[in-house]
Length: 248
Ligand code: 0FX
Image (cartoon, rainbow, N blue to C red; front, side):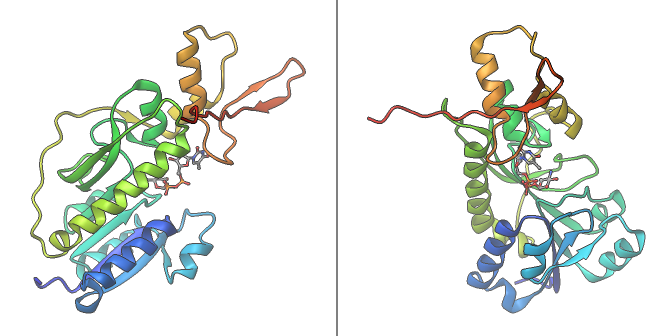
């Protein structure tokens, strides 16, 4: 192992933190390094993160950034709700585990946009630079989108791919032995406003039925109320779809 002393993990996703922690134990990382777990102060339901022993942090707070620059030689973002500030990522190696296949559909909810625009989807581990989901790629893997998939189905496949990438790359990252490749292009970026405007269904929208089905399944994600329209009485009606492949 190299001389990395302390590692910070900032995450708002308990499933990935549990997995990461087990891998660190199994691969001997937690024996040799102190690993601190934090969740974002913007996280409105942090109970599971608190149960995992994480404490809150505002990753943009200049005082915290100054502290982190001295304290940590490696920082992981495992689905952190905040964007890391430039002052931090230029001083400390920050690694993002991202639920998308950079550079395609960088930003918010990549699988939602990939179902609609047919760009590839998968998971990526990359070095964080000053732009969102943008830095040098350590490793990535593509996952399929099936015709019967909703956003949730693809997302679950992506999270499994992220876990596989964490398991495969953990030691090389911790030991500073990883290399990166430059993304093939700048790709495209989707914001939360792009997602919200998709959710507001325009009932007079034209297009093929196939495009409409893709839009609805892209916005169907378990219990989330995403896609909606207003009925003639002005009532807001949410819509989500289920799809089923024929049994063989
Ligand atoms: O862990 P995560 O995938 O998301 C987190 C952060 O919340 C998010 O801000 C950050 N961009 C991402 C890298 O890490 O969990 P989530 O529950 O916020 O979202 C998971 C999926 O759930 C998302 O891909 C789409 C779906 N979703 C989520 C919300 C909040 C919806 O369909 N509608 C929603 O309102």
